[in-house]
Image (tube, rainbow, N blue to C red):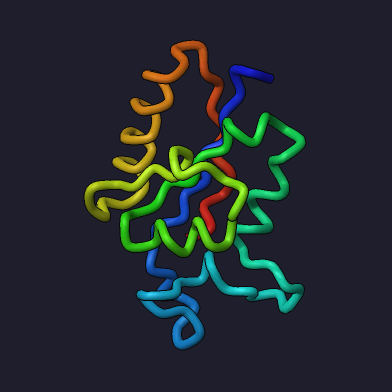
Length: 116
């Protein structure tokens, strides 16, 4: 499992959930289901048993780094990959893939369904 990495995309504005979701607090950070956990927290928790927690990365943009750290207090700041700008899904995957490849050329990367 040391070569398994989970990459969770959490950078979108979540405009489809307006008015609940706002640019400063999009849907991935909201407790949409009313169970005390955000979509980001639920997604992260699903993968804790799939790979080591240190191999779970959250892909976002700098604007949401603080919210991610607040909602996932056990995650290392090194596991939050902030895109330099919002460029949608494909560039996000490419950007993160290069970062993970630099860490481990044998990495197997899992991309759960996008929560943004």
